[in-house]
Length: 214
Image 1: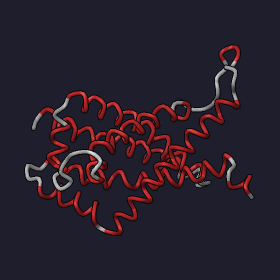
Image 2: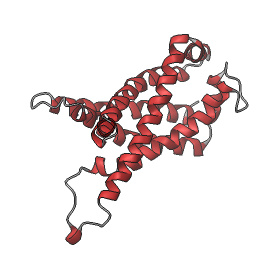
Image 3: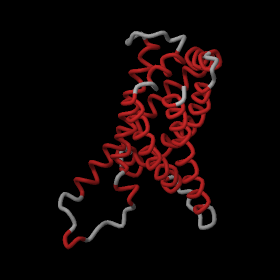
Image 4: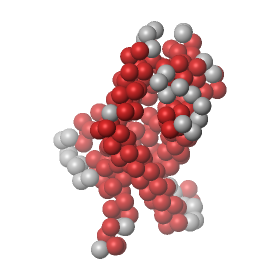
């Protein structure tokens, strides 16, 4: 039983479920962040307050944090397993059939982790009281951060790499869950491309607008 629960296949299955859960969260996060473009801080601050205080959201938040930890931890574990399984480079220039996205998933994932650490420090830790700031005025916190060029550079690079991560995560999750189909898999791949472009582009639009035009 333990071999089944902790096999690479079961880890990939759980990672796929965790990844799909995170994919559902990002559009909601983007919609809320678009309120930062309003001149009135009240809508964004109300949404942030609701997300921070509503009991159901708080439960989802705990599930989300756990999901992130599972996704990252098992992703790193599986990548290390793959590296250990191939300790010697391919001779004669032969390369794996693995796609570009799959080979660099660990690095795009690392960029996402970098952003999450930065995001937690600047927002979530304020809510917890670990970092100075007003948890009732995240609108002002966000606007101050987006006036810092270095923050925008990191933000934009991380979201560009997130796009690569999202495309592979979206399509591979369906494959791992056994949902491949000759007719529907090409459709899933198209949706994956749209999602992987639209979500990072939306966040990048917010960053650039607040940095250059506000």
